[in-house]
Image (tube, rainbow, N blue to C red; front, side, top):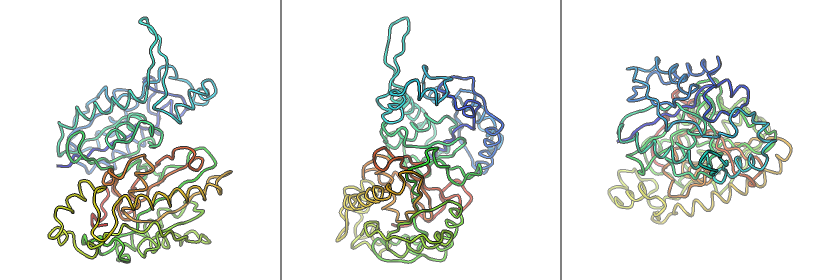
Amino acid sequence: MTTRVIIVRHGQSSYNAQQLIQGRCDESVLTETGADDARKVGAALSSLSLDAVYCSPLQRAKQTAEVILPYLSGSPPLQPSENLMEVDLPLWEKVAKSDARKKFPEDYRCWKERPEDFYMEITTSEGTRKHFPVLALYQQAQQFWQEILPRHQGGTILIVAHNGINRCLLSSALGISPARYQSVLQSNCCINVLNFTGGWGEPVQLESLNQTSHVGTPLPTPRPSNRGLRLLLVRHGETEWNRVSRFQGGIDVPLNENGRQQGQQVAEFLKDIPIDFAVTSPMLRPKETAELILQYHSGIPLELEEKFREINHGLWEGKLESEINQEYADLLHQWKVTPATVQMPNGENLNQVWERATAAWDRMIQVKAGMAESELKTGLVVAHDAINKVILCHVLGLSSESFWSIKQGNGGVSVIEYGQGLEKLPVVQAMNITTHLSGDIFDRTAAGAL
């Protein structure tokens, strides 16, 4: 039984507006903008039947949850949890971010670039101790999951909390290292969707990350830095084989009518976002999708990257999943449970796909980084389910064993930003955004074969 978890960050707070570090200081409250955005979250969730609503006890999160609650059917009671408190930064609370950067340059750099190593020395009557905020928060998130998941097996729950704890809830569930704490963006009043297949430690899928369309921002805005690379990673639109769960892999199946419509919807969704370059797999389905998107971006040549071709399923290609199950039941089960261990009959294995896709991705970043030395450049990359999953795992520091932890719907859009080529860790600003296709917070696209 799948347990669906919707995670929301609180609305804009008074300290957010003033660019002050909040931590566990409870003086910060919702602004009018924050309350208005919380109402928009409520409207976006109004059709759902929820089993429970949990929130941080800090004012800004609790107020956000209280604004959302009247929109929810059944009015489940609000349950504050200490394990949803924000990251504890006692020496920096109420300090302006710009001041913290100036007063504590080495510590601030460590906080941003090596969060797993960052600590504060706390002095009490019992002496001085080292406090590691991110490692403590990561452990706190794990405790929350272990406590809450057994209560709601097969249900749907809502969590309203903070930037830092949300990052750790997502990361701890997926097995993303605390070293990547700064690599996951959480905008005010964003929506994330996690699907747990069982209890803590069992497989979990990130369906979407940092949805913001419901508050009037189609995609998160670029970071304040005026240089670097921003990649819009898109999965191709639907094919007829996607729809009927027929494995296509290396067979060059074109978009169906719904897929072309999805491509047009992606094009409309991205039409006002400047695009400086575009790369696609040479196969028909992503190439058609990319061409539809570029109709609103004249003069941008479409580059073909052979290494972004879909995984070769070998003898499985052209067969329905039900047909594969008759002949390769054990191997198909293995593919669904431990995909990194499977060698496709007369085809590829996932590690081969990983090597070629990530090498091509990193090479592209290195080449394009030269364009972005003095200004932000945005690139469109259109590829396939397996390729996009591999790239996102790679970016998040996951291995091929986490392949199924990443959802990629037809026409889904992910946003990855690099500050300085490959020198610093990238930031996943959003993942598998499909609201432009259905107006829904859930991915309603075909769940067919790759």
